[in-house]
Length: 203
Length: 203
Image: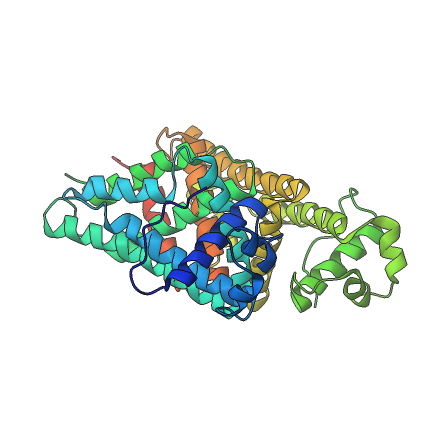
């Protein structure tokens, strides 16, 4: 199983990157509750000691993993933004809240919800998820501001609209991972309706 | 510390209800990660054995607690719904996503996020949170349908709007409990804007 992530951008050594990919595979295979350094080591040809050489504890490794995942997550948006702000918004929403996620994406969302619950009590996790949310809001806000500058969108409070998008996609993804809600399609339609009303109202 | 919940509706024995209130206080005091049957027993004048007489395990007790909490949560809406659908919607949103929550409410939201993460892997938790979400959607949908029947709202798809409200309030509450987001005010404004556009557009 491959993560599909791009190769290093220089921030991570080859060894660290190999550990991150192994962590990703171990999380998908075993889930957060059953994750251990041993199980991460099993996912590649290294010993537990070689992981402890880089990370003092499972928590420290997971915080690094969140940082690594957030970098890749952001790259996913950056490389695909085009010339049409409306299409770009739609694209970002589809990346954040896929209508029909593949099984691996569903598992990834489940893992994310379990990791994120640690942020209630663990400051280092909280910082990572704050950064992730900030990146999502900044991405959506930048697209809206580009649309305003190009005259395609009304002159709205772009931060307010971006915060709304973040709340909707986080809430719907959270609901899908933790309850039997078949509401993603309804939420996607209502989010489009919201964005249309906010960005094009009166035109 | 008192939970402020109403007394029994007959579904719970006095002993069970006492255990539920003790669980509530123990969760607020110790958090989910440090909760134990001993700590629940410390919160009232009973032994651990008296708790095990009613519940076989901590997980079984917590599933009962979610059911108990959902009943009280629902009662919170029912007793306060009035004659004006717009005001009722605003009231429900304020209950779900208070602009300026008291410290106890913040702790309760944190506990809820930690409990809800268990729903990723535990079917019994998943069922309870599914029921809770269903109740919230039904409450919002009923208010919207009343507003449509009374001619105050446009003839919208009430389920779709209610699912949007659920996603927004869950997402914003989740963000507040797990990241440094100061966005509740922005989300409340954008949610009002959404509801206004959906329910009153074109009037």
